[in-house]
Image 1 (cartoon, rainbow, N blue to C red):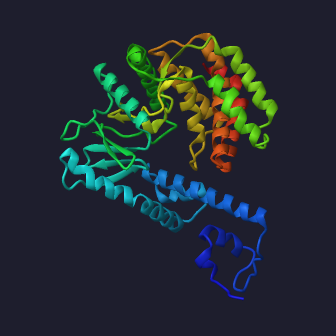
Image 2: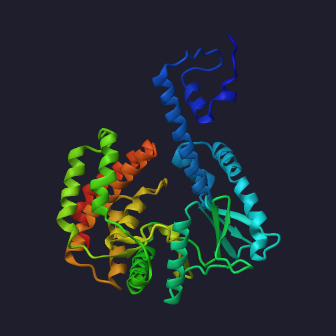
Image 3: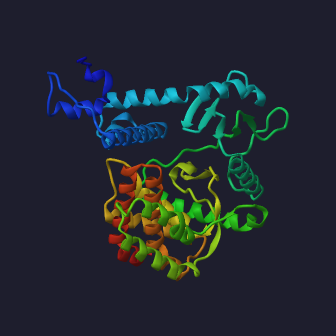
Length: 389
């Protein structure tokens, strides 16, 4: 029998676990059956997704120590994962370097700021799309919002007057880099108040330009009854119980026809809002914009705060204070109806069920369970949410 060094075949984090039970000798690992092979495949998928999110947090500017605390890994392991992930994007970086002259840029200095976006010479951002229709919709929304003096990034045309460049079924869109940066302190109630205000300002602008944009008319309720139900059923209700799901859908349906609908951003988090000198300096990323209930954006942002993987998680009281400040900021521009306020906890819970179903569909069990935990956190806060708003 041939022996191999575990360092050569096992991930460092798995090796550390094994060493707690056995080290310094030979360990025989028998061949597994199909079920075991499937478990190994699932474990590999989990590792790939974890490494992606580690790299994403690195691009967001999180220090290795903080990322290590979140994932219970050493800083050296985090560095190794980041380097390995960076290698995956080298080919795309090379393609971008080759096409930059189409915009009249020679030796461009590229800095990856997101898995699908690079900063160019500290002045521009080039984003990579696989979906042409989505990109063109984003361009249209940005152009119309600019006409209404909303701070969004201006598209940079190529030397031949094209809005974007296509290369092997991938599309590249360049825009000006907006001033400002993302908020780093997610517990700062002053900034969450400003986020509420910024969401309302964007909604007001969307209401003005809705008729000029072709967009997806979506329904959270229909999603809950459709693909979300199908995903949870196929998973045999292993993460969330069917009774919990049905109770939430029934409550959402009782509110739904009374909730105002309009064009919304659909992906509101601190990463898509830029601030400079204490004020909003720009909105980015309209890829998922659609017509839906308007409180979706508020609820999505607030539940997203709970989903942040940090070593300084929210207490219930801290999060409720942020709910209050976001709603206060929003209502300084647009008043919410009583029915909207009463529906907010249910919409938040529906969004978490949406995430449970989505993560199940992409075989990311860890994040599906995380979403279920947020779902329960919100359930425990229902009365406090209603009392504070």
